[in-house]
Image: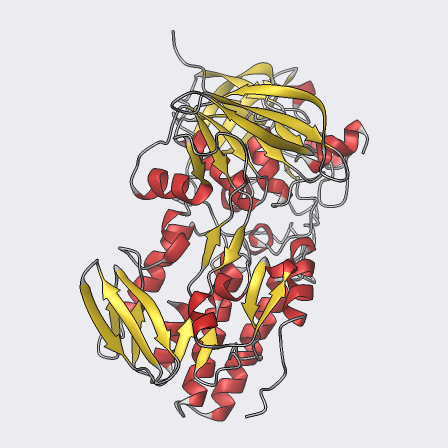
Length: 351
Length: 171
C-alpha cells in the first residue's frame, strides 16, 4: 500500500494485487498502538493505520486499480508476465513495466512431538481469528516465543479474556520490546527465559505441554514442567516470502539477521532484476513501521525509473525516508537489522 | 544470569536505571496532581511521551531511540503521556492526594471489564501479584482511543510497587 501510494503520488498507474480479502496486510489485525514518531503514526493502533492508508488510496481512484483475494502466482522471466488468480478460478495475466514485490513473510514453526494436534497454532492465525474474525482460539494459551509478536499476541489474548499459562523463550532475555514484556508480566503472566517446549500433551486435542530449561547450547537440562493449556501458540519468528523473487532470478543472499533469503537491493530497494523492487518483510523481517517506509522508497524508485516526477523530488523523498529508517533502526533491536541490511545492499546496480 | 538480571530480562524492573527513575522525593511530596514515573529502560524508536507532553516535562529526544528524561519541575501530573504511551510505561503518582497513608495513582488500562467509579479493585505489582486493594476515583479516556487512564486510591507506601489494577469479579 505504501509503495502504491508513493508511486501514484508521483504519477504512476498502479495495479495492486493482494491475496487477502482486505488490504492492509498484518496491520488489520494489529490492535496495539504503534511505536516510532509522528511520521510513523506513533500511538495509533495498527488497524487504524491501515484504514488511513486505504482512505489515502481511495483518492487515487483513477490511477490505482486494486484486486483483493487475488494471488500473484508466478512471474515468467522470459516475457515479464505475472500470472494472478482471483479467488480460486479466475485467472488473468498482466505485464507491468515495473513490479514491487511486497509479499511479506511466513511464520516459522518448531518441530516437537504432537505438534500436529488441533490447538497448536501459529501466532498469525491466532491474531487473525481473534482480531479479524472475533473468535477466541481457546481458554488457556501457552505462548512459545517472547519476541514482539509473542508478547503482543499474549497481551491481546488477555484483552479478549483468554488466560496465558506462560510465555516460553529460548534466549536469556525477551526478544521483543521490554515494555511489552512488562505489560504482560504485571498482569501475572510468567515468562520462562531459557526454556523450550518439549512436547504437546493430549490425545485428540491439546491438553497441555511440557517445557524444560535449556543450557547455553540449547540442550534441554533441568526438570520438566507440565503446563495446562488448550492452545499452544507458536511465535518463533518469520521468514521472508520470496518465491516470486527467486522465480525472477533476482540475486538472493542468505542473511540470518533478516531471517532468511533476501534479494540484494540498492538504496531505492531495486533488486538485481532491473524491473523489480522489493519492500517490507519480503526484503527482511522487521517492524511494520520500517516496512511502510521501505514501501515508500520502492514507490519512489519505481516512479523514478519510469520517468515520473523530478529528479530533485526523488532524491528529496529518498533522503527523508532514509532519515526515518535510520531513526527507526537506531535502537537495540535495530542494530541487528542494520548489520543484515549492510550484507545485501549495493550502492548502485551496474546497468 | 542472577535472579535480578533474569527478572529484568523478562520485563520486570528491579531497580532504578536509565529511563526508569524515581522522581525526587522533596518535590514529589508536595506536587499537587503528582509527578510522572516512566519505566522505559530499553532504547527503542519511540517518542510520543515527549511529543504529547504539554509542558515539555518529558525532554526532547536527541535520538528517537533515547530513553525518556524528565524535568520534574515542569511535570504537572496531567497524565497525557499515560494515555498516549504505546508501551503503557507511564504512571502518575500524586502523593498530595487524600488523607494519611494513601496516594492517587493514574494508571493506563486496556482490559475489560472497565472499573467503575467507587469500585474496589485489586492492585497488582510488576509481576502481577495482588499487593493491596484500591478504590477507583475516576476512569477517563483522554485520547478517545480505548486506552483508559484509571485514577485509583492506593496505600501510599506501595506506589513504587503497584503498576496496574484488576477488576474483581463480583460473586
